[in-house]
Image 1 (tube, rainbow, N blue to C red):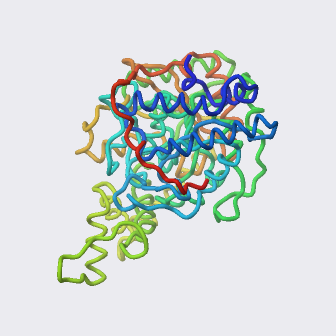
Image 2: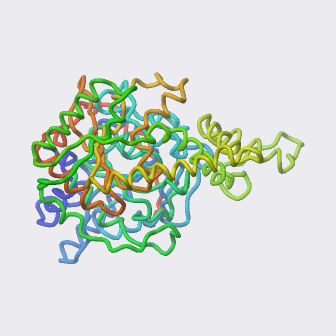
Length: 510
């Protein structure tokens, strides 16, 4: 196995023991990037020189016997909606194509303080609005299991990079499934923590009551390791919860005997690919074989989740994205020679040129739902149904420790096949959206393959019970081979260096 295929916890042990250096690990990952990135197209920005310089500093520090942190020398990728001081943060949008933040997101500070080296910024659907990473303003990312298919979205660049060996692990964001669905499509582990467990400070906002930062990793232990580092109260985030953070790795016992798990029957109904349903059912049978008590259960308001989400999320996006006006920062539309546009014209031109079609569609949906005469009929009604969805989960968790469902209703679909059908793309998140509406934690773990493509199984827990979630996911993973499988993408070593590698920021300060 090559260095770039190891997990973070394996590499951390090797680096700590001096069996491999941080610089060697970083070089191995960049060799992999040079080999496959032109096929996968996961990165918007690469920071090659910065990474290698920082790796050398870490190696020197460890040779002197100093503690370099729990992620010392581990190359980590960041979704491009996490602010990085001195390094452009684009949200894969023309609106922020040249935006360089003056500060780091809280999670970026935390992983860097623990010795991680930041490889670069990963492609995404523009402003995290999409399920395929085809709505990036720059280029689509491809699934490393089949380059003709999508990697999922909106954290598609992050999921594809981890799966293809272009990053050891990554941080993404999840508003309606944007970590879990691409994790499922790319055959890796992806977790959406409880709303408020991880600081959103420095995450470019899409829908503030739904967004949450989380890890994308090769196995559950790496997920627990990253969560240990990024979780915790942050006074800079008003939605951050002041809860005690346990050592999540202590839950990885491999034991789930007696655990009560409810199978959400509505998630196996109309619209699911039969191959996906069959694969996930085999995964559930494995949980039962390991000693879990499995029983079918009903989620009465499941059918309302998607319409509720596509009122609440666009409404919040309409409000959040109003800040991009061509005045303060970001893209500003030019004026024709000899004319000076009035303020309204400046706003219209800037937003028309700076935002892509999906972002504009959602802004219009949200603005309409919040408009005079329609607020009560749409937005207020959606908030009321959101409460009913939360009540469904509360009732279920009085009986069950965990809930299980497919992560996504389909296998990764071909590139461009759904671009003209927004509703089909919205339904790609039908099983993940309810979790965000309720603010609960959930994890997607690889549970098998169908037609040579990975399938993910979603486990859901009560609020702040990430330990329970990781315990069950780890037990399943340790008794199945899927997390050890790697995609077939090989790339072409004769190709020029990967896209984005020419972007250098000598003033990068993390």
